Image 1 (cartoon, rainbow over the protein chains, first blue to last red):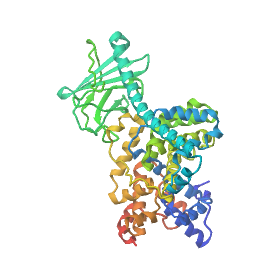
Image 2: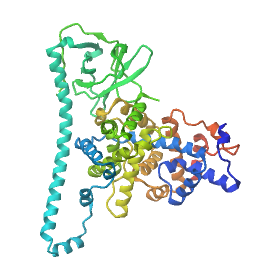
Image 3: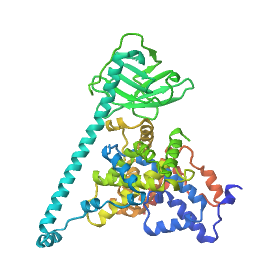
Image 4: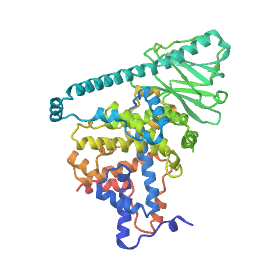
Amino acid sequence: MGEEAAVKEPRGAMSEHQHRFAWENLHAYALDALDEEERRQVEAHLRECPLCQQELQSWQDTVGKLAYAVPFYEPPVYLRATIRNVVAVSPAKAADTPVLRAVRRRPTRSGELTTLLQRPYMFLTTLLILALGLVGWNVRLHRQMSTLRAEMSEVDEMRSVIVEYMNNPSAFEHFTLEGPNGARAHLLYSSATNRLTLITDGLPWLGEDVVYTLWFHDDTGRQVLATVFRCDRTGRAMVVFEPPFPLENVIEITIAPSRSTIPDSPVLNGRLKRHEGSPAIFVSSAL
Amino acid sequence: MTRQQRSDEELLKRIALGDEDALVTLYDRYGRLVYSLAYQVLQDHQLAEEVTQDVFTRVWQAAASFDPTKSRFTTWLTSITRNRAIDILRRRRVRGLTGPGEAELNTAITRADERLSPEYHLEALAVREALRQLPPDQRQVVELAYFNGMTQREIAEHLSIPLGTVKTRMRLAMMKLRHLLNPSPPEDGKRKRSASGRAPAVKEPSQEQSTSEQEGV
């Protein structure tokens, strides 16, 4: 059955008009930018038009991708545990809004406050407000601590790589790549953990807002973004990550500023050479 | 279909069976995306936390009903997130609470992005590249709709420009974004044919460009 047959044919001028109206407004519908009446018309037509349903899906995919353009914010670390706890209790209960949330967000009007203060429950109300204030302060503190803890865990992982490497260098494969003007990259691979550690030195300083990307190339011409990192003003960086494909397939690496979906303007590019000398660790000042 | 998408689907199947670890894995993968989007809309960390919690609770409850043949998981996830955040934003607006200022879609990779996964980073690069190609006035109407939850009519009032101009700008912007971001959208020719020989339902961007100024009524 062809696509034409699958589409329900509009009947009469009104259907033709409805189809055209819906079709021309599906992108705005996907953005939720239509007025109530327009939205109602589009939804009514969508119920009976597979072609518009398919078209809408394409617009929704586009709108969905816009989320990737928002600046990145790190959620507090405790949120992960909170979500696990919420779903562990009971799916049905988890959908309910926690009582504390409602209390916390309830707007306070001066008139209501005056009435409350005049009641005999004034003391208890004051206590409750103080308690909520303490909870709010505690939450803020907890959030700051969580962020610090997340950063510390990354530093801990780097530190453990360095210690393991110094204690037992033979447990790692060590590759190097050198570029112009003293730019160097070291890659340490631990097959026990399947983790790679990238250590750079002498990469050009490109400003606070530019991050670097590390790309792997295999013998089929495929290039895959392996990790993203930021270096300090001396071009030093250290990052631990999981390789996107087996290291034996990597024939070449590229380090380039993150400016596009391909590694434009590489600052380091070439085949990996197995490092045979003594350990040489360039520790990022981030440590 | 990429390895990442397959993994998402596998995780959803496990979530549907009540596997909490699968949900946490999904959170590790997309928690930042959800939280960042919610924060960008609401400009409030506490509300962004609540939205993030609600969204993953919803994923927990609705994983079994998710149909990967109808939609990408990330499309579904970001749609839930944005809808939830915009709902809160609109309620606050109705209640007279101060809303956030005009948020902007980010067109540059910043140092804060260094902690993104490579997959996330590549998606971000592609979207930001696409956005950079939009004229500022077209990007603005998309931003106002996407982050501020404004309808086309509200955008016209907000910017004091004709409704037709807003509609034209939004359509041009979205068509260009779709062209740049969706590798294989339905072909226009196919759409025209399947509309049973009727006149093309939608004009090509190049055609619309030339008529865009006339639509500003």
